[in-house]
Image (cartoon, rainbow, N blue to C red):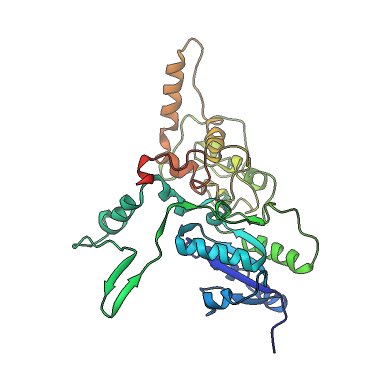
Length: 334
Ligand code: SF4
Ligand code: SF4
Protein backbone atom coordinates (compact mmCIF):
# COMPACT_ATOMS: atom_id res chain seq x y z
CA UNK A 1 0.00 0.00 0.00
CA UNK A 2 1.49 3.39 -0.96
CA UNK A 3 2.55 5.69 1.86
CA UNK A 4 0.24 8.71 1.59
CA UNK A 5 1.99 10.85 4.20
CA UNK A 6 3.80 13.97 2.92
CA UNK A 7 7.34 13.07 1.94
CA UNK A 8 10.27 14.48 3.92
CA UNK A 9 13.85 14.47 2.63
CA UNK A 10 17.11 15.49 4.25
CA UNK A 11 20.32 15.70 2.25
CA UNK A 12 23.93 16.44 3.15
CA UNK A 13 26.20 18.12 0.67
CA UNK A 14 29.56 19.54 1.86
CA UNK A 15 28.99 19.29 5.58
CA UNK A 16 30.29 17.57 8.68
CA UNK A 17 27.15 15.60 9.54
CA UNK A 18 26.36 17.78 12.53
CA UNK A 19 23.01 18.80 11.02
CA UNK A 20 21.93 15.15 10.93
CA UNK A 21 23.06 14.78 14.54
CA UNK A 22 21.00 17.86 15.41
CA UNK A 23 17.98 16.16 13.84
CA UNK A 24 18.68 12.98 15.82
CA UNK A 25 18.92 15.18 18.94
CA UNK A 26 15.26 16.10 18.74
CA UNK A 27 14.84 12.72 20.47
CA UNK A 28 11.20 11.67 20.99
CA UNK A 29 9.99 14.41 18.65
CA UNK A 30 11.30 12.12 15.90
CA UNK A 31 8.13 10.12 16.52
CA UNK A 32 6.10 13.19 15.59
CA UNK A 33 8.05 13.42 12.35
CA UNK A 34 7.33 9.77 11.68
CA UNK A 35 3.64 10.24 12.47
CA UNK A 36 3.22 13.11 10.04
CA UNK A 37 5.84 12.52 7.34
CA UNK A 38 7.05 9.74 5.15
CA UNK A 39 10.75 10.33 5.94
CA UNK A 40 11.97 8.77 2.74
CA UNK A 41 15.40 10.20 1.86
CA UNK A 42 18.38 10.80 4.13
CA UNK A 43 21.64 9.21 2.95
CA UNK A 44 23.14 8.82 6.41
CA UNK A 45 20.03 7.04 7.76
CA UNK A 46 18.15 5.49 4.86
CA UNK A 47 19.08 3.48 1.80
CA UNK A 48 17.00 5.42 -0.70
CA UNK A 49 19.05 5.96 -3.87
CA UNK A 50 19.43 8.97 -6.09
CA UNK A 51 17.62 7.04 -8.85
CA UNK A 52 14.59 6.73 -6.53
CA UNK A 53 14.49 10.52 -6.23
CA UNK A 54 14.96 10.97 -9.98
CA UNK A 55 11.97 8.67 -10.57
CA UNK A 56 9.62 10.85 -8.50
CA UNK A 57 7.32 13.37 -10.20
CA UNK A 58 8.32 17.01 -9.76
CA UNK A 59 7.24 18.46 -6.38
CA UNK A 60 6.52 14.96 -5.03
CA UNK A 61 8.57 15.70 -1.88
CA UNK A 62 6.72 18.01 0.48
CA UNK A 63 9.71 19.25 2.47
CA UNK A 64 13.45 19.01 1.91
CA UNK A 65 16.00 20.02 4.53
CA UNK A 66 19.19 20.56 2.53
CA UNK A 67 22.32 20.88 4.64
CA UNK A 68 25.87 21.50 3.54
CA UNK A 69 27.49 23.86 1.08
CA UNK A 70 28.05 23.06 -2.59
CA UNK A 71 31.66 21.90 -3.05
CA UNK A 72 31.36 19.34 -5.85
CA UNK A 73 29.39 18.90 -9.04
CA UNK A 74 27.50 16.11 -7.29
CA UNK A 75 26.46 18.52 -4.50
CA UNK A 76 25.19 20.92 -7.16
CA UNK A 77 23.32 18.21 -9.08
CA UNK A 78 21.63 17.01 -5.87
CA UNK A 79 20.59 20.56 -4.97
CA UNK A 80 19.06 20.99 -8.44
CA UNK A 81 17.36 17.59 -8.29
CA UNK A 82 15.89 18.05 -4.81
CA UNK A 83 14.80 21.60 -5.61
CA UNK A 84 12.91 20.27 -8.60
CA UNK A 85 11.28 17.45 -6.61
CA UNK A 86 10.37 19.54 -3.53
CA UNK A 87 7.47 21.81 -2.69
CA UNK A 88 9.34 23.43 0.21
CA UNK A 89 13.13 23.59 0.07
CA UNK A 90 14.94 24.76 3.20
CA UNK A 91 18.64 25.63 3.32
CA UNK A 92 19.35 23.97 6.64
CA UNK A 93 22.31 25.09 8.72
CA UNK A 94 25.16 27.54 8.28
CA UNK A 95 26.94 25.70 5.45
CA UNK A 96 23.84 25.61 3.26
CA UNK A 97 22.93 29.17 4.24
CA UNK A 98 26.23 30.90 3.60
CA UNK A 99 28.97 28.37 2.86
CA UNK A 100 29.95 27.63 6.46
CA UNK A 101 33.34 26.20 7.35
CA UNK A 102 33.83 24.54 3.90
CA UNK A 103 33.73 27.98 2.25
CA UNK A 104 36.87 29.03 4.11
CA UNK A 105 38.60 27.00 1.38
CA UNK A 106 37.60 29.78 -1.03
CA UNK A 107 40.67 31.67 0.13
CA UNK A 108 42.77 29.29 -1.93
CA UNK A 109 42.83 27.62 -5.31
CA UNK A 110 41.81 23.99 -5.64
CA UNK A 111 45.32 22.69 -6.36
CA UNK A 112 46.77 24.51 -3.36
CA UNK A 113 44.01 23.14 -1.14
CA UNK A 114 44.49 19.54 -2.34
CA UNK A 115 48.25 19.73 -1.89
CA UNK A 116 47.83 21.14 1.62
CA UNK A 117 45.30 18.52 2.67
CA UNK A 118 46.87 15.45 1.08
CA UNK A 119 50.59 16.31 1.25
CA UNK A 120 51.24 19.35 3.39
CA UNK A 121 49.57 18.76 6.72
CA UNK A 122 51.77 17.73 9.64
CA UNK A 123 49.72 14.61 10.30
CA UNK A 124 49.69 13.29 6.72
CA UNK A 125 51.94 10.45 5.63
CA UNK A 126 51.74 10.47 1.82
CA UNK A 127 55.24 9.57 0.60
CA UNK A 128 54.14 9.17 -3.02
CA UNK A 129 52.38 12.54 -2.99
CA UNK A 130 49.15 11.00 -4.29
CA UNK A 131 46.36 13.49 -4.83
CA UNK A 132 42.89 12.25 -5.80
CA UNK A 133 41.81 13.15 -9.32
CA UNK A 134 38.43 13.16 -11.03
CA UNK A 135 39.26 9.73 -12.45
CA UNK A 136 41.74 7.14 -11.17
CA UNK A 137 42.68 3.74 -12.53
CA UNK A 138 42.08 1.09 -9.88
CA UNK A 139 42.22 -2.71 -10.08
CA UNK A 140 39.12 -3.73 -11.98
CA UNK A 141 38.36 -0.44 -13.68
CA UNK A 142 38.26 3.29 -13.29
CA UNK A 143 37.13 5.18 -10.22
CA UNK A 144 35.31 8.45 -10.70
CA UNK A 145 35.04 11.20 -8.13
CA UNK A 146 32.78 14.20 -8.50
CA UNK A 147 34.76 17.20 -9.73
CA UNK A 148 35.21 20.21 -7.47
CA UNK A 149 33.34 23.37 -8.30
CA UNK A 150 35.69 26.32 -8.78
CA UNK A 151 34.59 27.65 -5.42
CA UNK A 152 32.30 26.58 -2.58
CA UNK A 153 28.78 27.98 -3.01
CA UNK A 154 26.00 28.66 -0.56
CA UNK A 155 22.93 26.76 -1.75
CA UNK A 156 20.93 29.86 -2.71
CA UNK A 157 23.69 30.81 -5.15
CA UNK A 158 22.71 27.80 -7.26
CA UNK A 159 19.00 27.07 -6.69
CA UNK A 160 15.96 28.89 -5.34
CA UNK A 161 15.71 28.44 -1.59
CA UNK A 162 12.30 28.93 0.04
CA UNK A 163 13.53 29.33 3.62
CA UNK A 164 16.79 29.34 5.52
CA UNK A 165 17.40 27.86 8.96
CA UNK A 166 20.71 29.15 10.32
CA UNK A 167 22.93 27.55 12.93
CA UNK A 168 25.95 25.27 13.11
CA UNK A 169 23.93 23.23 13.56
CA UNK A 170 20.37 24.52 14.04
CA UNK A 171 19.33 23.88 17.62
CA UNK A 172 17.01 20.87 18.18
CA UNK A 173 14.19 22.94 19.72
CA UNK A 174 14.27 25.24 16.70
CA UNK A 175 14.12 22.24 14.37
CA UNK A 176 11.12 20.85 16.25
CA UNK A 177 9.34 24.22 16.19
CA UNK A 178 9.82 24.62 12.44
CA UNK A 179 8.78 21.05 11.61
CA UNK A 180 5.72 21.29 13.87
CA UNK A 181 4.73 24.52 12.18
CA UNK A 182 5.08 23.02 8.71
CA UNK A 183 3.17 19.90 9.80
CA UNK A 184 0.38 21.97 11.39
CA UNK A 185 -0.75 23.24 8.02
CA UNK A 186 -0.73 26.80 9.37
CA UNK A 187 0.31 29.41 6.80
CA UNK A 188 4.04 29.67 6.26
CA UNK A 189 5.83 33.02 6.25
CA UNK A 190 6.79 34.65 2.98
CA UNK A 191 9.50 33.04 0.88
CA UNK A 192 13.00 34.01 1.89
CA UNK A 193 12.17 34.22 5.60
CA UNK A 194 14.74 33.01 8.09
CA UNK A 195 13.24 30.23 10.21
CA UNK A 196 14.30 28.94 13.60
CA UNK A 197 16.02 32.08 14.84
CA UNK A 198 15.07 35.35 16.46
CA UNK A 199 15.24 38.81 14.87
CA UNK A 200 17.42 40.01 17.75
CA UNK A 201 21.09 39.45 18.55
CA UNK A 202 22.57 36.59 20.58
CA UNK A 203 23.26 39.21 23.29
CA UNK A 204 19.49 39.40 23.83
CA UNK A 205 19.51 35.81 25.12
CA UNK A 206 22.87 36.08 26.87
CA UNK A 207 22.87 36.38 30.65
CA UNK A 208 26.24 38.09 30.82
CA UNK A 209 26.06 41.70 31.91
CA UNK A 210 27.18 44.53 29.66
CA UNK A 211 28.80 47.14 31.90
CA UNK A 212 29.68 49.64 29.20
CA UNK A 213 33.39 49.20 29.75
CA UNK A 214 36.07 48.93 27.07
CA UNK A 215 38.67 46.19 26.70
CA UNK A 216 42.33 47.21 26.53
CA UNK A 217 42.95 44.62 23.79
CA UNK A 218 41.44 41.47 22.36
CA UNK A 219 42.64 38.21 23.86
CA UNK A 220 42.37 34.62 22.70
CA UNK A 221 40.36 32.17 24.86
CA UNK A 222 43.46 30.45 26.27
CA UNK A 223 45.09 33.73 27.34
CA UNK A 224 42.75 34.68 30.17
CA UNK A 225 39.99 33.32 32.38
CA UNK A 226 36.79 35.27 31.84
CA UNK A 227 35.02 36.74 34.83
CA UNK A 228 31.67 35.04 35.41
CA UNK A 229 28.56 37.03 34.57
CA UNK A 230 30.35 39.77 32.61
CA UNK A 231 30.11 40.26 28.84
CA UNK A 232 32.96 38.37 27.16
CA UNK A 233 33.48 41.03 24.50
CA UNK A 234 33.93 43.71 27.15
CA UNK A 235 36.60 41.46 28.69
CA UNK A 236 38.43 41.37 25.37
CA UNK A 237 37.26 38.00 24.03
CA UNK A 238 36.23 38.03 20.37
CA UNK A 239 32.53 37.39 21.02
CA UNK A 240 30.48 38.48 18.02
CA UNK A 241 27.08 37.87 19.60
CA UNK A 242 26.22 41.53 19.01
CA UNK A 243 26.30 41.00 15.24
CA UNK A 244 24.72 37.51 15.20
CA UNK A 245 21.11 36.29 14.99
CA UNK A 246 19.79 34.89 18.25
CA UNK A 247 17.95 31.61 18.52
CA UNK A 248 20.54 29.31 20.05
CA UNK A 249 19.88 30.52 23.59
CA UNK A 250 23.38 32.07 23.75
CA UNK A 251 24.87 28.62 24.28
CA UNK A 252 28.52 29.52 23.86
CA UNK A 253 28.82 32.56 26.17
CA UNK A 254 26.85 30.56 28.74
CA UNK A 255 29.88 28.26 28.97
CA UNK A 256 32.42 31.10 28.68
CA UNK A 257 33.15 30.61 24.99
CA UNK A 258 32.81 33.61 22.69
CA UNK A 259 30.02 33.46 20.09
CA UNK A 260 31.60 32.71 16.71
CA UNK A 261 28.54 33.77 14.73
CA UNK A 262 27.07 30.46 13.58
CA UNK A 263 23.48 31.74 13.51
CA UNK A 264 24.43 34.19 10.80
CA UNK A 265 24.79 37.90 10.44
CA UNK A 266 22.07 39.98 12.05
CA UNK A 267 22.26 42.70 9.44
CA UNK A 268 21.69 40.92 6.16
CA UNK A 269 22.42 44.07 4.17
CA UNK A 270 25.89 44.55 5.64
CA UNK A 271 29.01 42.56 4.89
CA UNK A 272 28.91 39.97 7.71
CA UNK A 273 32.60 40.09 8.58
CA UNK A 274 32.70 43.87 8.55
CA UNK A 275 29.68 43.91 10.87
CA UNK A 276 31.36 41.44 13.24
CA UNK A 277 34.62 43.39 13.20
CA UNK A 278 32.83 46.65 13.85
CA UNK A 279 30.94 45.07 16.79
CA UNK A 280 34.26 44.16 18.36
CA UNK A 281 36.01 47.43 17.59
CA UNK A 282 33.18 49.11 19.50
CA UNK A 283 34.28 47.44 22.74
CA UNK A 284 38.03 48.02 22.33
CA UNK A 285 39.54 51.03 24.04
CA UNK A 286 40.80 53.36 21.28
CA UNK A 287 43.25 54.93 23.74
CA UNK A 288 43.90 58.62 24.22
CA UNK A 289 43.33 60.13 20.81
CA UNK A 290 43.49 63.88 21.42
CA UNK A 291 46.49 65.37 19.74
CA UNK A 292 47.42 62.04 18.13
CA UNK A 293 47.89 61.61 14.40
CA UNK A 294 45.31 59.39 12.69
CA UNK A 295 48.04 56.92 11.77
CA UNK A 296 48.98 56.56 15.46
CA UNK A 297 45.34 55.93 16.45
CA UNK A 298 45.10 53.25 13.75
CA UNK A 299 48.36 51.69 14.94
CA UNK A 300 47.00 51.58 18.50
CA UNK A 301 43.77 49.90 17.33
CA UNK A 302 45.68 47.43 15.18
CA UNK A 303 47.71 46.48 18.26
CA UNK A 304 44.59 46.11 20.37
CA UNK A 305 43.01 43.88 17.70
CA UNK A 306 46.14 41.79 17.18
CA UNK A 307 44.70 39.17 19.53
CA UNK A 308 42.61 37.94 16.59
CA UNK A 309 45.06 35.44 15.14
CA UNK A 310 42.96 34.55 12.09
CA UNK A 311 40.81 37.55 11.07
CA UNK A 312 39.13 35.86 8.08
CA UNK A 313 38.41 32.71 10.06
CA UNK A 314 37.11 34.78 12.96
CA UNK A 315 34.94 37.33 11.22
CA UNK A 316 33.86 35.26 8.18
CA UNK A 317 33.89 31.81 9.76
CA UNK A 318 30.50 30.74 8.43
CA UNK A 319 29.84 33.07 5.52
CA UNK A 320 32.85 33.49 3.26
CA UNK A 321 30.91 32.10 0.27
CA UNK A 322 28.57 35.06 0.29
CA UNK A 323 30.76 37.79 1.80
CA UNK A 324 31.88 40.85 -0.10
CA UNK A 325 35.51 39.83 0.28
CA UNK A 326 34.84 36.31 -1.08
CA UNK A 327 37.13 34.92 -3.75
CA UNK A 328 39.54 37.81 -3.89
CA UNK A 329 42.58 35.52 -3.92
CA UNK A 330 44.07 35.40 -7.44
CA UNK A 331 44.72 31.72 -6.74
CA UNK A 332 41.01 30.94 -6.67
CA UNK A 333 40.81 31.20 -10.44
CA UNK A 334 43.58 28.70 -11.02
S1 SF4 B 1 28.86 40.14 23.26
FE1 SF4 B 1 28.83 37.94 23.75
S2 SF4 B 1 29.16 37.79 25.97
FE2 SF4 B 1 28.62 39.93 25.50
S3 SF4 B 1 26.40 40.00 25.84
FE3 SF4 B 1 26.73 39.59 23.65
S4 SF4 B 1 26.70 37.33 23.47
FE4 SF4 B 1 26.95 37.83 25.65
S1 SF4 C 1 26.46 31.52 20.77
FE1 SF4 C 1 26.98 32.06 18.66
S2 SF4 C 1 28.39 30.43 17.94
FE2 SF4 C 1 27.38 29.68 19.84
S3 SF4 C 1 25.59 28.51 19.08
FE3 SF4 C 1 24.90 30.63 19.47
S4 SF4 C 1 25.11 31.72 17.48
FE4 SF4 C 1 26.30 29.81 17.36
